[in-house]
Length: 113
Length: 277
Ligand SMILES: Nc1nc2c(ncn2[C@@H]2O[C@H](COP(=O)(O)OP(=O)(O)O)[C@@H](O)[C@H]2O)c(=O)[nH]1
Ligand SMILES: [Mg+2]
Ligand SMILES: [Zn+2]
Ligand SMILES: [Zn+2]
Ligand SMILES: [Zn+2]
Ligand SMILES: [Zn+2]
Picture (cartoon, rainbow over the protein chains, first blue to last red):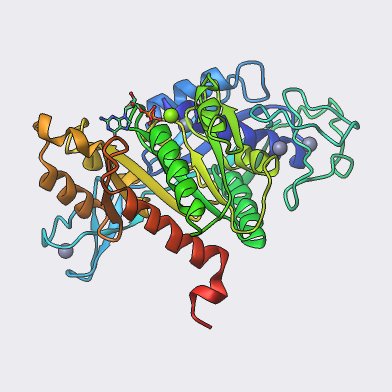
């Protein structure tokens, strides 16, 4: 379950922010987890719950935005929707598509006290 | 959070509730004396806008490692695969092959190994028996090596010019793909005892590879493995990767693998000579 490691990386980031921005509790986290990021959201939520026991982020609410997967096709010369990175273009069925959106794994905003 | 390395803090001023992250690394330390001490009265709720990559810190530490390797002229190789694909065996055979080469007067460059494992130190013991310095990193529950651990382990090794530093990552094809260690090249192993569709099931891992090694090819006559299909799957996911086929047992393909390392070693560790200037 690699989401536990990712949850620990997220906690690292929160604890560093707590130090720089002088807060003591994280109440809510607004995250972007792109459709092509390879991160499973249910597993991330579960990992986060385990990783944050006894920390400044215990019990914090998580709002997760899911930017859709998009990619650029050099044959069609346009942006197309894709569900999976590194797959062929759904339009022409020929070219491999270069992912351009949906790879995010990013903290957008925090609500803290 | 230094849960992985337990690195000591240089700061005795204030202690964070759950961790301490003062560092002696260049570039990412911060002085705990500079920010307002928590007063205990921060009851008001506020919003902080961040737009920060969760893995940004790992990338930053990976860049520090990359700078260290460049400065010392070291070639760092990140070896990745599922458990049991033959990473440690390949590293052992590689050490033996370089030993034979340097005895015959060719390419006498030093080797060192960092072994990642969740719990045991068996792999590092195997390497040390061959007379090569090896550091074991036990990740416990962690299922990948990160740049922070590699930075500390690298500094415990003799970092001489021209060193080839081989890093055996944790046996896992998912999240090690996301964690840059500062390596010069990623080598993904895929054995003929696995399914031909492995590259398609783990596209991020195979997409990030500079070299894919199809391993245990001595077993091909006994298996139903469709070699062509496997090679095509690798090419479909990553058209730019070099593919080599190798057996640590029969030593078939060993020569090509050693040549691949040597030419990269020359380019990375001796860039002036390699460019023919
Ligand atoms: N037949 C055969 N077996 C191999 C080869 N390389 C490794 N093995 C066996 O595969 C098993 C796992 O090897 P190991 O190097 O520990 O894999 P790791 O988990 O990727 O480090 C061991 O039993 C090895 O003896 C090979 O080239 N051919
Ligand atoms: Mg091993
Ligand atoms: Zn601090
Ligand atoms: Zn197209
Ligand atoms: Zn450290
Ligand atoms: Zn992991």
